[in-house]
Length: 312
Image: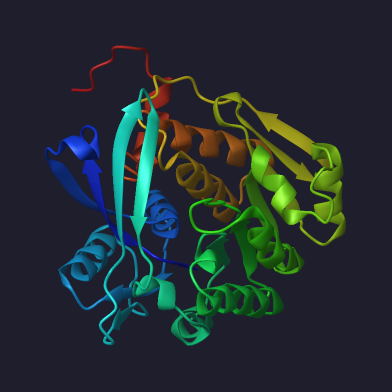
């Protein structure tokens, strides 16, 4: 199960200020992970709020089309709109994202919206550091869900996913640090680790040991083109990235999380989970869109085919 804000996504083919055509889709870190897991054959439930508008209908239709359970999704009847994001390519794989989500339906999510979905049962609860940045009620929903899930024996996964356009590093640290007490699996990029520490200047080794000592069962660090590392009390496991020609880096982190959780749900060991995670991330960076290029279960082996292969 996961929850958060899924928005309508307008993707430009060039600089927004110059005009031109836009493609309409949907995007949201948690729903990107949900789609990735559903395509890999897992049962996934998404909770959250959308506006009572055409964009909200698009969000729900897209998630249902990907096989995701939206039974507990709420359509806001107070006039709050579905959030919107605009993406524009600016330099190579550098992409600029603009948000229009203040006062959105998704930002008003509360514990009452998500706890019924959690009570219906789940093996894993996936959360991100984006949702608590949206509003006090959203922050309360995340902490409450994590607490309830941990108490119920549900594995809690937290992807830090820091967004500087949503809140400051100091504010993020204040809200996210208490989350570690209810987190089993923590996923972060190298530059996000300081947001979880009392001493932000601690080096990586100190940071990881501090988190493990605080009760986090596993810390996974995403290193982009240099792969990833998993840390547990038993030691560290490294995995190199898959080599691909990068087209669009947006959504790569969510794809990585989907692959890692897929391995976890499938009962594989740490090296296999990391391998699947870097593979799904490679699919994301090799195709355009936040989630559109994510693989199905039978496509995971495509990277092992010789370059130039045509499957007929």
